[in-house]
Length: 335
Image (cartoon, rainbow, N blue to C red; front, top):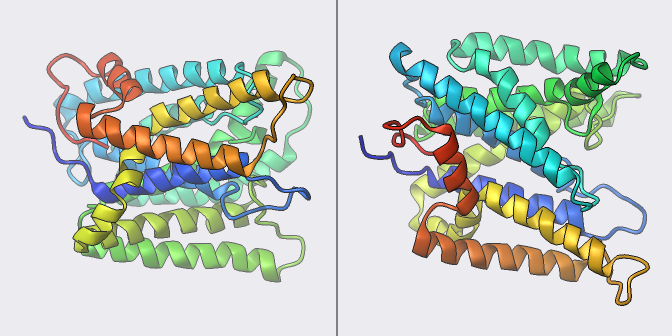
C-alpha cells in the first residue's frame, strides 16, 4: 500500500511548535517575565504528538484488530527510544528541560486509549484535567528513589505525564475525527478557543487561580491546550484552502516534518554553547540571547528545507521508523 500523503497543516503546526520552543529557550529576559512561547509551544508539540499517534494508527478509520498488535508494539518501542534519547539529552549540559523522556512516558500511558471510542477518551481527558493537578498538588516526600522518579515523571516534573496527557488525548481525538474535514477544522478552532477562554478567563477573574506556564493547573491545561487545538485547526483550515499559505509556510512545514531531528540538534547546539562559550570560558557569549535564537531558527529552517527537498524524511525520523516498524508495514499514514 502506498504511503498516504502528509497533512501539510500538521507539519506546519509542528514547525511552529519547534520554533516556539527555540524562542522559549533562547529569548533573553532580565526579569524572567513569561512570554507567549513559554509552555504553550511545548503544549502544542505534545498535542501534535497525540495527532501523530492517531494518524499512525489509522486516523478516522482506526487500524483493524489484525494489525493493532504490530502498531502497539511499534508505539511502545518508539516510547522507549524517546525516553532513552531524552535521558541522554538531559545529560548533555544544555541547561534546557528536556521533554522527550516525558514524551516516552506519555506515549506509554496513551497506548491503552488508542482504539477506544472518542467519547470515552474525551471523558478520560476531562477527568484528568481536574484530577491530575489535584494529585500533583497533594504529593509529599517519597520514601524511595524509585517512587520519587515515578512521581516526578507522572505528576510533579517539568512535563508531568498525567497532567499533560489530556493534550495528547485531544490530539488523538482530533485525528480520529478526520483532520481534512472542514467540520473537524471548525470544531478545533471553535472548541479550542472556548477552552482557552475558559482557562485564561478563570485565571484572570478568579482569585487564586493561575494559568502560568508550567504551573500544571486546570486553568493552564484548559488555556494552553485550547490554544494549541485552535492553532492546529486554524492551520489545517488555512493550508487546505490556500496554495499561497502552503507555499509561504512550506519551510516551516519542512522543519516540522523532522521535528525530532531538529529538536535534538537544537539541544546539542545549546550544550556546545554552554560548554564552549558559557560563563568562565575564554570567549563567553550571551545565553539566552537574540543572536543565538536567530541562528538556531534560521539554520534549522534552511537545513530542514534543503534536506526535505533532496533527501525527504529527516535522519532521526528514518532511524525511528526503521527501528519501530515491523517489516512489511513500512507504509501507510504518516504523521
